[in-house]
Length: 137
Image (tube, rainbow, N blue to C red; front, side):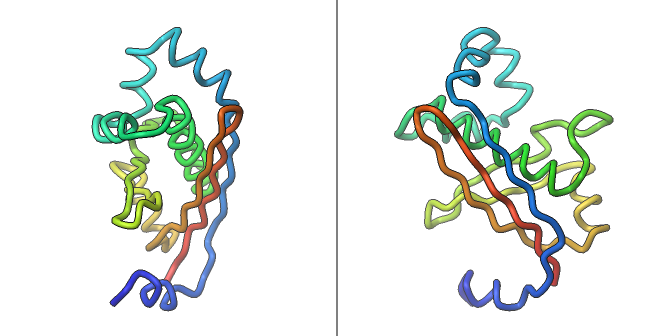
C-alpha cells in the first residue's frame, strides 16, 4: 500500500498547528548557546541529518518550527515533563518531513485518536515555517 493509499483511510482532522521561526534570531540563539541549546531541542539523529546539504541553521530552524507546530496541535506546549526532543523530525524516503513522537506525547496522541501527521515545512534565509495536521482513523 502506498503512502497516498494509506492517507485515503484517514477521515478526521483532529488538530492543526502552525509555527514560524525567524531564522536570524534562531541563528543568534544557536551560536550563543550552541551546545546546551542543540542537545536540549534536537535529537542526535536530527543534528546528524541537519548537516546533509543546505544551510544547517535554516534546516534546524525548520525542524524547530515543526516541533512547535506539533506541540501546538497537541495543546501541550513544552515543560511539565514534555521536551522538544519528544517530537523528532525525520525524513521519509521521498525527502518529505515526518514526525515521530516519544515518551508522554505518544500517550497523549493516542488518547486523542491521532494515528498520522501531515507535515509541511519550508525555510529561507529569513524565516522557517511549518504546518502540521493531526489525523485520526
